[in-house]
Image (cartoon, rainbow, N blue to C red; front, side, top):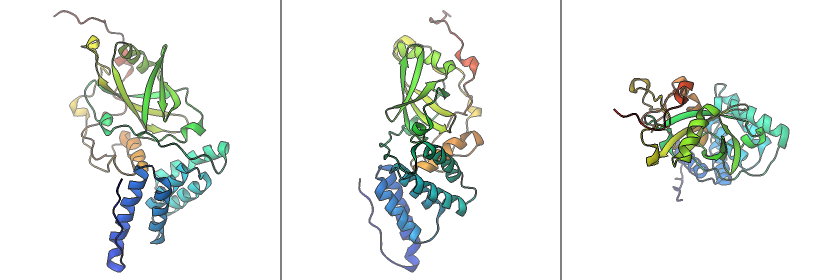
Length: 283
């Protein structure tokens, strides 16, 4: 991946140089080049205090296994901006992880990201689910919103796997229906939208419907068009922590750019998963 060269200069060029450094830091992070991302964010901080650069540096250090140092930079970010939810949330996540792993751990493997398309609403094809039987906090600490999730059927359970690690089980009310559709050939894509120490929420999207499932929708109670809203703030292609905050804030009417329409978080109720006859009724 090619990166733009940083222009040299002083005075009037300072703002331009900082903007270029920010773009470079985000590009390094997007490509999983965490050591370079850390170095670039340090260059930004040499130009003056910056809460977002502190967040990005902390994230880079976290990915490199430097947990104690990462927490220190999140604390600096929170001191600079007391309303910074990214820093506040990750300070707590690191506290949990460090209680088990100490100040340092192995560097995280590069995570697969869910395609932006699965976050876009399509009637009957997109829904949300909570995970149960969650993995240990130490495992969940290396999982982030936006990470891709593989759905693996096993008997009457539907396991959720991220970065090659089982992170939980899809809640029964959703899994029961999807397991039948999967058995008949449907395929699904999924991604993490939010997570905490005790809860993980994923979005699931039907990406292929087997002809045997014609007439059967994966998520029967799709939102009406009046329930949907456009998103214009931010972008899922920006740095990972910003995506984390905005996806979690979906329920609070925060807006996200590059998503045309997104389902409300609670669109799929229990009534959606009642049994349906296998055959379509004749008109």
